[in-house]
Length: 287
Length: 262
Image (tube, rainbow over all chains, first blue to last red; front, side, top):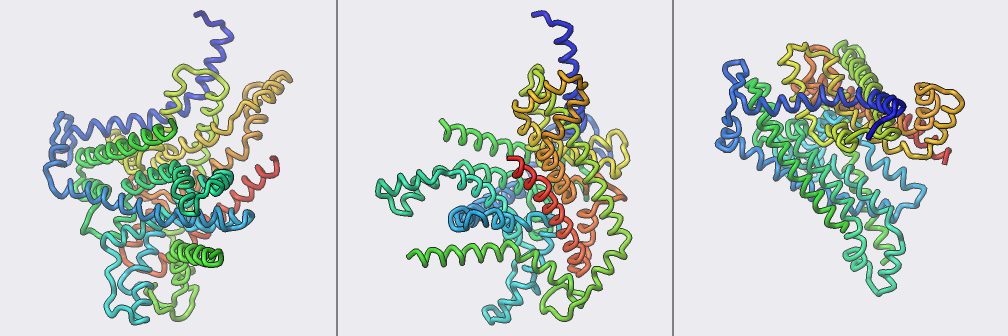
């Protein structure tokens, strides 16, 4: 196929528009990422990184129980957070979509996600004010006489989970709501005509139709939760480390770039598996 | 039955709204605490902590850094994203699906990995960490977002208007700047404001890629190491206020306008 000079000029122009973004992405995303992947197979000698290929870092990951434990902690926390967040967010999204008058829905939704826009660091810190030994919750409970000793609500997994659930309830309310308002009321009418009661309609009609929204929200929750460092570090304390905390430790305390890079790649593989599972599921759902 | 349902719904929604607002409310409330610890009981109200943070040179310079980085990196991300979206929507490029996938790829990768990759590369080439490196990191994070939003709104319906402009003698850059960009203004503005809020709040990349001129989240992070402090509450409340202002501006500027034009 021959191209005319005009076509060639057009194509040059197209490249001119696309190239800045492409070059930027290659230079500051792809190249650093590949370089980091390479480093994960190198090793650290003293403070130098030596480019001799080895699987030592990955062997260390699978050989050291505390590193493997961090991955399992991450997976456990993420699973707990995802399930609790969905269970809490679904009814709220449903109430906003069904019970709130139409002209107030946008306002109700904005209010539901308003604290989303506080600084993430500050939001985790403010949970500390609520949950710590002398914090609001413990003081209130002791004042009412329900407990005599402060509950341990922070510097452990409870704190991490509460902090995360707070964040992801807002996110999931948004994605599930978006799914719910798109449903035609005809589905419900048809189910009622066929004699289904409220629960049956929900179980067999509404829930299956909103599963894609739940899955998208759950996937976002999974990715953001498992890769997050701030909430576990502020609210979780240092007893049960998650993977991002371990990565930052390798970096900060030990300046061990190769090990940090290897752990990051493990994190990335886990997220990729979750993505593939999710994409596969969504595709199956559609066909 | 119907009444019971309504009552239960109201109760549930209220409980969850309390849960959602609890930390922010406590944060703001105890930023006025007249004592050195931001914990109950609340005694005495004071504006002392607000005075102290506005007199704190380190905090104020971090705040300025955050604003500069957020505005500059979002502007760059928007321009690059707009140009690329224009190229892919108006021309046929070889392997364009693959190229688009490359541009949005950073969105699927955790920011920790993006920061770590850039940090390894920068230290390999002895690049000094500064606001510039933080800004580059934020463009990496925001470019996919800007591209995706603007590309999604580049439908075929603007093509005829662009062609008309060209027939009337407009040059490529004139079409782009005077016809296409104004038509897409709502989505360009949405992309810009959204990436400003992301960059303004981003911690991990800013933490890894800055040294002395840190951004506000990083400065707050280092303040946290000294424990609970009403000053942290005050600066946190200010950050919240600024974010809400951004949100209101976005709501008014972007959604009102796009609603009117429909």
